[in-house]
Amino acid sequence: MRVPRHVAIIMDGNGRWAERRGLPRAAGHRAGVKPVRTCIEECARQGVEALTLFAFSSENFRRPLTEVGLLMQLFLEALDREIDELAGKGVQVRFIGARELLAAALTERMAAAEARTRDNAGLKLAIAVAYGGRWDILGAAQRLARAVAAGELDWASVDEARFGAELALGDRPDPDLFIRTGGDQRISNYLLWNLAYTELWFSDTLWPEFDAAELERAFAAFAERERRFGLTSAQLGAGAC
Ligand code: IPE
Ligand code: IPE
Ligand code: MG
Image 1: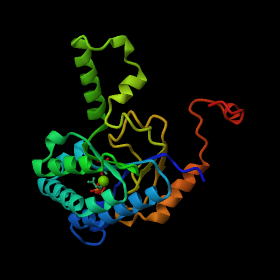
Image 2: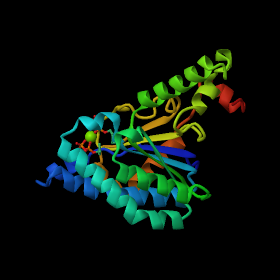
Image 3: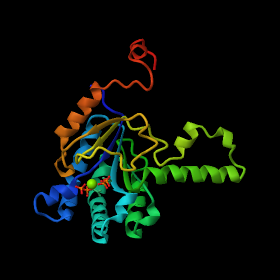
Image 4: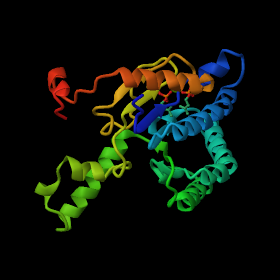
């Protein structure tokens, strides 16, 4: 079976999972940690090269302060708890997002996790925290504009490859497969540039209930898709790509 090289996931539905059980939303966020581990293990096992997980969007800062605080605390605890195992499995960890909006206690641990796993050769894991696709594109545009203004870059040399390289995931292939749990069918300001030709797969499963079997269903659906990238089926059949 054709396995995606890069999988990008919006892990949605924690709050509803908890509310349906009469539990506080926090319980849903806690229950959402296990499927993260499952996904990392399964992707590594199946030879996926890169996995990018949406943990907290730019817009999630608009949630009640208590929920934002709890999520940040949970990220911190999860990172402390999981980093040894991730490092041991050869996972290369990276965080993408506006770090200046996060507490120093968290960004210090993020930087430490990245430094510790930088040379690992296994699964390339990116966790999007305080991330927005527009933030990503805008930041790239600003950095390029600054280089042009400083006379270090010729504006005419900025093509799609150069622009894409400036993004948070500029050194990784675009996602082949996008998965969103929780039933909503939208991108929610995730990797806007990178998802241009990604296969989209939506599931009604709430994130805390996402498991290896569900990931397998997504992979099976992906393997069935014909990715044409603008070509016709006949061209693909003739081996043009
Ligand atoms: C996803 O679950 C986790 C984050 C956005 C941090 P939600 O908290 O959005 O869960 P629902 O969508 O309210 O069920
Ligand atoms: C998207 O989920 C972001 C994450 C899963 C981290 P949301 O639940 O915040 O998305 P919207 O706001 O419903 O689109
Ligand atoms: Mg949600």
